[in-house]
Length: 408
Ligand code: PLP
Image (cartoon, rainbow, N blue to C red; front, side, top):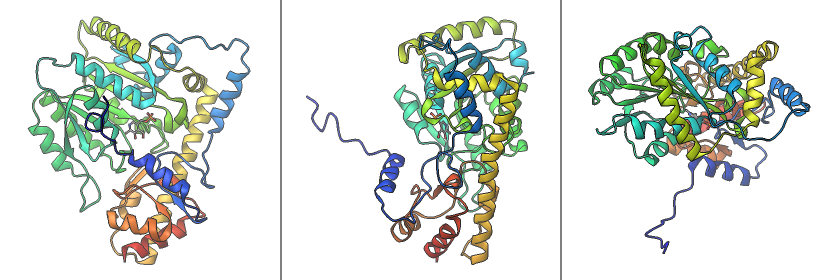
């Protein structure tokens, strides 16, 4: 039977546990810096105006029904997703070297990719996937669920609170040839630390030399800098260099469609005379995997994203909304850094503005994190990560003072 030694009690998901503790806290000054979801200046979830508009259009469409989508999802959605991440003039699209399936948000895309690799990537040899240390913790669970082994590469330097490029480079150089290298395309979660374009170029060269397989996870395109092209640069560079790779794309953050689970998985093959037939075979196998896992993807979020991506006026408004979100976060970074510097809080705080995207790795210790929670009702993950979106003009002074107190 299912006794405790057969089914032991699993630990609570740390992030969702943190959310529950925050909800229980009755102090009016409490601050939630845990969850990775955008909040407006009133600490409220924000429905992007463009999403509201698209939603109204779709709801009033007399032809709307609730039929199943195809196995690979809504075609207008997957093709617009390809253009968004690869660029409309991508050589891979011109040469028809890309196959894409709509997935259950970014998590589903990572899962489908990992499942495909587990089944078809060097099935007779030991495959290792490399994740950044630290990474989005779900990477570990998703890859091990499909039976892939993993290791980590150094990424975050505790000293500089920036990138440990040498450590990263050396580990990838010493990895077995043909390893899977999971890369965050932009706005690295949880550190907010990205490679420079020059560092990406060096890494691409190394990955090519070692015949590794790049697996891009992109959950923050447009949300990081406010510029979709800039945030997609690394992936486009790898494609230009002719890599075979895959991409897990999420629309949770950049559309604020968290619960609607809109995402896309792309597989891109290298340029070659039989690239199209390779991609066709890969597509056929991905369809079978998708069928057995989810049968077909959920429609609503993809309909919203698709309408926006395929309608120039809505697309322009979306870009505006992206600038609103990224702009507010960048403003909060500047404000937090300058408040801590004004207070003379021990330590250096330049990393707050050097880092990008939803998260900042503050460098606060687990002890300081606990102190912040107990003394000031500030909630963040114990690795010292804060969601910048949880800060606003009303709580930032309070938060800076609380940090100052915890650090001294
Ligand atoms: N990958 C990374 C790096 C993330 O940070 C996230 C969300 O936090 C995801 C993937 C997937 O998110 P979702 O499944 O909500 O699209």
